[in-house]
Amino acid sequence: MKFFSGFCLKNDKKFFKEYLEEGLVVAGFSKGAQEALDYVLTSKERVDKLQLFSPAFFNYSEKIIEMNLQAFKKDKDSYIKNFLIKAGAILENGKWKIENEYLEIGECNIVDLEKLFTFDWEKIKQIQDVKIEVFLGEFDKIIALKKARDFFKNYADIYFFNKSNHFLRRAN
Image (cartoon, rainbow, N blue to C red; front, side):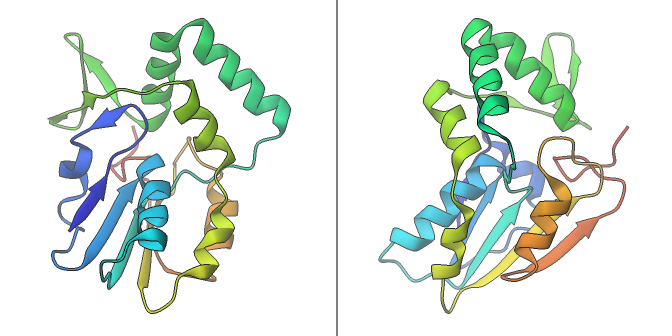
């Protein structure tokens, strides 16, 4: 099992442990879902299943992307804070948490953010002989949810979590 973390996060695998499978599985959360797809496409290792948790699927214009990049450049900490709040995290005693688990903030930069917004999901069409599962939350405020669901239904089994946020947890 290989797992790729979300944008500016590390060790977030724990939030999806009840859905992750052992064996020849590659999984990723949010931006990590993009990295998981790229890994499957380039790896020489056998992969039986690709699990994409709240895959970072956007439909932003160049203007919106540029506004996001400028906001990140101007104040990275505020940008990440706003992102985490929209994703469903809560700041408690100076630490971010989802339900009873704490988030760990990882390294990220402007290049990561630009790649996040411009990722070519059409590459998924190249995958053969790998079962694909996509997990989406009904109240995900990060991704283009309806467009993601419409896109991925052609390539994957979709698991839709009612009343759930980007972390697939009950939305507040």
